[in-house]
Amino acid sequence: METSRYNALSAEERSVIESKGTERPFSGEYDDFYEEGVYICRRCNVELYRSDAKFDAHCGWPAFEQEIPGTVTRLPDPDGVRTEIECANCGGHLGHVFIGERLTAADTRHCVNSISMKFARPTAGGQYYCDKGWEHFNVGQYEKAIGFYSIAIEHTKTGPWEGQCYHRRGWSYAKLKQHQQAIQDYDQAIRLDADNELAYVNRALAYYDLGQHQRAIQDFDQAIRVNPYLSEAYNNRGIAYSDLGQHQRAIQDYDHAIKLNPDYAYAYCNRGMAYMDLRQLERAIQDCDQGIKLRRRPGHRFEIGLCRSLLRGEPSKAQVDQG
Ligand SMILES: [Zn+2]
Image (cartoon, rainbow, N blue to C red; front, top):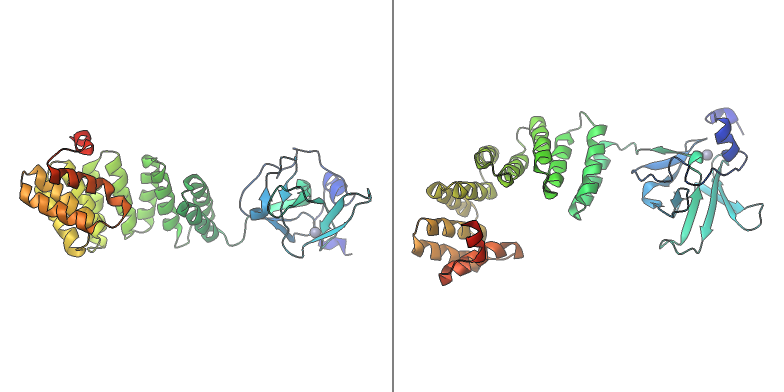
């Protein structure tokens, strides 16, 4: 063995890695540690475990349900009971493996001394974390998504998707109703890419939720400047104008949204309500009728409810709340 090829070890590290000692429970650096990355051998730098395989076994040492294939050797422990594990590359002592505890589906626990390993973030860098963030965003885990986007942003200062990371982190904040944080991130996304139409739309929605309708309208203007075919931007700008009592202006936007997307049920319902506010009841009813006919997704229920009650000539609870 050419020991010079390996990392120099401290006395404490040698006592575990070379003399098969055990660190004190709940004392290791990685016992309560769940960042995304890989764990490499402290002595030879070979990758041993991925963070995906790590779980909290409450035993005081890092626990993994499986190793990276081929990287860990199992051998009988001198105590005659346990199974020792060591790095397949350098023979460094890692800990022990336990089977049949039923802690995870894999039913295997690699109980590893923190001091035998070193944590490393994957070399894939920011893009990797940005993708991880998106995975969590898509299943509604917005706090985790924010964590990954934050690492991604920290990891890149030049990547073309840096703006995308800010945009998506902002969107995650918005989902958690943290609109000020969201706006800060959308600002960054727009600074990095002045043509990010979705960042304008989302920033507009955040301002809208904060009651800053004029500011929202400015952002919808920008989104429409970048992409004049964005029917949602017209529809939403219409809503902001409606809220400001500018119903004629709102109707122009709904007209435009419907021209771009003749199946836009929301836009019909919104236009119908704008006509109602202008006391043009016949047109209001026509639009609401059309909106109800076109409804396709459960998300339309709120507007559809308003339209139904309008057709029946009774104010719905939502209208009362709004009024
Ligand atoms: Zn090793």
